[in-house]
Image (cartoon, rainbow, N blue to C red; front, top):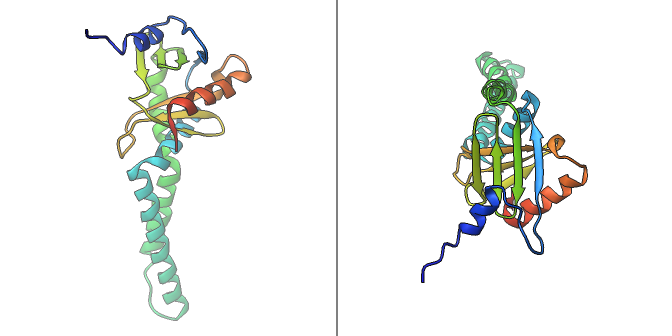
Length: 189
């Protein structure tokens, strides 16, 4: 006999309330802001290979600037080009999540209000224009920031992410319940 092991999870994701012990549902409703998305992109950058590489490059540039400064102090002729590159690259590194968040927010604005339902089976994200169901395998890691929970895809560059702003929960106790669901089903990074 063949049994559909995913049927129960799909029923939960489609809106039916889970039954039994430990069954928990947290609902969020929000319109994404630039601050939300910027926070999520910073969290994602911390776990992606490309994000870690950016910090290594910035560190290498800082070492070059320090060497140039030492040469200048020693009376040697030193170039100011590394200092210029450090300032430019540093500014881009700091501003890039905000700049990207502005672009994401423009796209999200078109979707309207986001309504998210989180259960033991995964989550459903419904907007004015679409509905998406994700099980925990699609984004098996998460990072908590001061303002949000950010679910992150398993690939090395963390291409996919789902943002769950803490401000969007219905009651303050829902933040702890949401954290508990995520801890039971995902790996905190």
